[in-house]
Image (cartoon, rainbow, N blue to C red; front, side, top):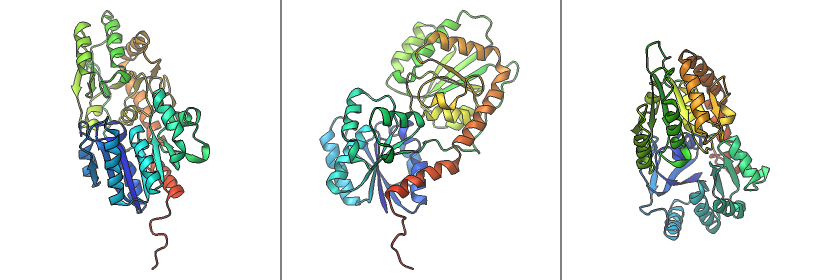
Length: 365
């Protein structure tokens, strides 16, 4: 069987990050998969897709030319002749639904976001009948699909998009005399709350009881100029913007803790990667984070957008750096169990069995 996997862009991180693992399950079940990206953006996801030997077609247009994008996708689907269209994110889903309807190809649609705009909620709710199965990437998104998109239970499925890797590098515990190193992974965007982190660090500037520490943010985005200005205006010397990271495992293994001050999230792959590396996260209680992190055991949770609460939690962790490793071990054990590779693969195969017959069905000896 042929599966056309349609994504919005090849932007690094986000929804494109787990595509190699997702499509590996599809191909492992005997299906052919080709990837179609509606625009390139920064293109940082492309090397990982190519390393997974995925055929990728990228449209040369932008993000506003919807009619041109629809025509391009229709031509691609017509040439590839898939048995299933699998879409990810709102733009890809709507265009994929239209093409699927016109060409009578069933559609399966990811839902990654529990914080959609009102316009997108209305749009997806109106078109919900055009996708045979809606796949939530986390429990919080599953609730969102039920409550806001009115997706019935018999057309919903759960497939958490984080596949744990027990062999990933593990961070070395903090040693007395070391600077406490704290990392973060994320786009430089308002939703990630890095401005809140800046204001929290400004509060801590007057606290002389804290040990030496540094915070590194690995990520890029349109919000860099504003963050650089805020860091400069607040005279922050403990925060550094490292840019896009190509070695996530190495970056995390060099830290002692992790911070994720997001205003909103879905699954938040980055927090799960940090926990997998044995780092305790200090994170906003949003999205799936509140289901994964146990406050005081495997990390710390604070309300989103609350700089004083973030500052207080950060100070508490910094005053007891010897306790970070124990919390990190609890975080790693939880993630390796809940997101075990066998569970990830089984969830994907179960969805495929609902919409496609086995790849060898109907073939003779």
